[in-house]
Image (tube, rainbow, N blue to C red; front, side):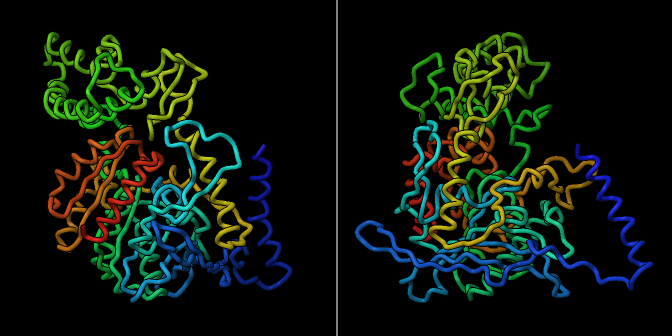
Length: 507
């Protein structure tokens, strides 16, 4: 049904200019559509107050457009950003400022905004149960890291209200390099407009935000001369070889994801043995994964039957999957199949980003889950509350659609320029992150992960960073109960917030 409309648009685009040239002088190029123009009046400022401990905490929110321009002064994109500054801060230009973004790629910053660091957070069940239908509630966040740093939320082009301008299209910004270039320029523009050049600066990125952060470091420090004090990584993707998307011939991913599988089986009471606690289980699994298991996988066809049988028995003990299934899988358990297999006898599947979440399946003989219970259960509560918050609390009076997640961006993302060759292989930005700490010997790194994240697993994160060459004295690694967004587990949210505040304050 779309074909006639598409055909008609092609006819209009080709035939109309020819007719116009015969009847009147050529027209000037069409101006950008009204909805693509930045609104110079789109700046919304509000004062707020909340209670933190025994004190009143006053702060100001500013929602505004930051327009990027090219070397010729032409507008290329507008970033719609929300920032929070503490009112009572003396020497406010010297107070730390943290730029916050989610990942995707193609994700707006609403999830970190309302889940972890902002002054308001969603009131969601901490035990991974379904939050139900609207109305949903927000609550003050006394754990907000606004205690220690001003906050700037970054929605990359094609997400939130941010979009391309003029001759540019959103997809021109969708790629490893293109995205990092535009976000770096946004940060430069923001610190210039708000006189924050000499403020201590931090970057906080989640998931693909780990890749973006690593690629921002040389652009900010070397190209734009913007010094950084620290980077904060939440469930970061850094080396694509450790993510469970490409597993054929990639034994590393099976070893680094195994502890997360064990944590999931422990949570859902599927292990055949009793364990003193989760920590005892994980320390044993980590030791096994990095030694006997990895060695067995490396041997391939040379692994004798008795040893293969012994390894399968250990995997059964750690994952709860049947020994027969493990042997038929050639000792290689993929996260996507595991999410379906673990609770198959109950007709359920677990979430990939947070395997605490589980829901019933329509097709119980399928290889993979029908959907992801984590995304299904958590998506609506974020968007519903954020839309209301924008208008009611921040005074943002905009009619256009706020884009929380852009699937087109994810599907059209371009590889980095130096990784487009025939033998480029996996994208790995760990080296860029490490080099940033060599170029700037004051730059510190904080990284956090959740035990129940089957995609960017905590053990993979630790493996990458501990092999990166970053000075251990400037590297802080923390693990928490919960999944990819471990802050949905309230005790983890409070602990992580406090750990980030300590990191920023240098404690």
